[in-house]
Every structure is written in C-alpha cells, then in structure tokens.
Image 1 (cartoon, rainbow, N blue to C red):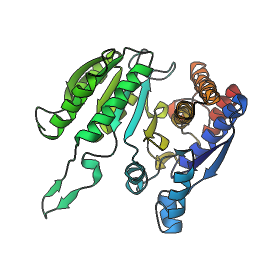
Image 2 (image 1 turned 90 degrees about the vertical axis):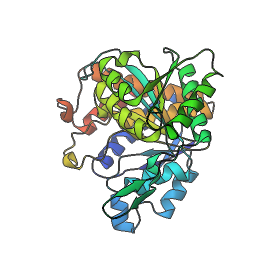
Image 3 (image 1 turned 120 degrees about the vertical axis):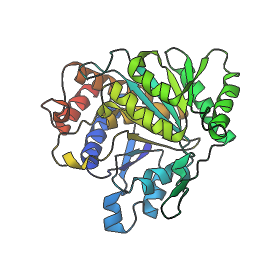
Length: 338
C-alpha cells in the first residue's frame, strides 16, 4: 500500500485533482497496486482559511507520504512548490515533451525531456531592492551542477531515444556561473561514453526548439533557463495541457502539471486533465523504479496508454476545441485504464 498526498490546489486545481485521482485509482486497481490518497491543503485557499500557504500539518503529510501529487496553486506558488523543492531537496525537475495525435504540435515526432536544476539560480529569491534598482543573486554550484548532469545522463540511458544530452547555458556572457555549470556537465559526460554530449547556448536552444525540436533528446540546464525552455517545448509539442512534470530528490518526489491554476476557466469544467494524469504516470514510474515494483510500471503503462487512446480517438476537452468536460475526459481515461 502506497500513501499518496494530494494537493488539490487553486483555480482549476480541484477539478484536475478529482479527475487525476479517479484515473489513478482505476489504473492502480487494474494493476493490483494499493494506494491510500490523503488530500493536503496548500496554496491560496489554504492561506486564506488557515493563515499559511503551506501549513505545518500539510508539510508533515507530504514528508510522510510515499509520493505527492500537486495540482497547480495560485499566487502563493513560491511559498508552496518553490519552498518544497528546497526543503525536500528535490533537485531534479523532469519535464518530458512529446507529440500526441490530434494535438496541435509543430511536428508529430517530438520526444524530448528537459532536466532542470531545481534548487539554485535566481529562483532562490536572493533579491535586494536598492531603491530605483534591484539586484538578484544567482547561485550555481559545482555540486548541484554535477548531480543534475548525472541525472540527465541516466535519463538519456534509460530512454529508448537518441542517447544524447545537450547542456544548455550562456557561459559566453555569464562566465562564472554558467562556466561552472557547463564544465561540470562536461566532466560528468566523460563517465558516459555511451551517451553523446553536446552544448548549446540558451538563445540558440530556444530557436532550435521551434526549428527542429525532433533532434533533441535530453536537455540539461539551469533553473530559470529550464523553466522557460520547458514551457516552450511543451507548446511545441501541443500545449501545456499535455505536459507533466516531476520534482525528484534522493528521498522524496512531487509530481505536478506544468501549467498554472488558470483562474479564468476555473469552474467551467473545461480544463484538460491530461497533464495531471500524465504526472501521475511519472509518479508510478518513479515508484516502480525506487520500490522495484513492476505493478506500478504496469499501472503507469495502462494510464498513459489510456490517455493516448483518448486523444488519438479525437476526444478533447472544451479548452482545446473539443466537447468533453474535465470529468468526462477523465472518466474515459479511467474506463480504458481499468
């Protein structure tokens, strides 16, 4: 029995949480995986009702669970997911982007993963207001750079892809910080003779993700660059509604959709739950690997195949031009995964 903490979040979050939980239960039931799901308050609603965007009880529930599924939260995101990434040392942000049939991708052969360092860079919040000017501290360390590079190379080995890692940086301008990052990646690359390694400046990478996204396999980069490029790659592959993500450390992991809380469509029951359901697939794959449990891998396969079957058959939610509600789409996934 696996304990799963589920953050319903804000905006469209609760609708997506209901959808993902139902689909997850169907797949796990079919594969013989026992799960106990506990809902955990965090985000804007928690801040309003409990006085904290991440109450101590919620943090403890996430700590004690085997894995966490987190729906998008609103304006308090920095106090929730950014805090959790650093508090639990979830140093690897993994964001796959692949083309799905029936979705508006640039090409039908996109299949890449962005591996983003998740604890450093300007996202540490080290900013100073000097009155009329501001200064931000950018931290990049050898230790964090080497461990995210190693994560990227292991990802490339595990994928049935091109066995290629592209290190993305801007060391020609940020010679100290990105110099540390690029050199660390090159050192780690020397340990993986079976994986091709190359480097690319971030502006060139942004261009090539539009021009020839099919040529990428695994991109490893720093925190802010990865945040931006992963949204670009998701859009190139068909939109944020199909984009899952994982925040992974050595002892804990949180899985979430790439997109935000989308307050403008909250309550309309039109949001695509695929990104959150596919995040649940990533969670099951992580449990399969870390717990050596083949049943979790089977549940993940059932769930991802069900999503593929739905979109390949033309089933879409209203926000992407279809006619299904969030719940109707999720019910279709659940029935196929069961």
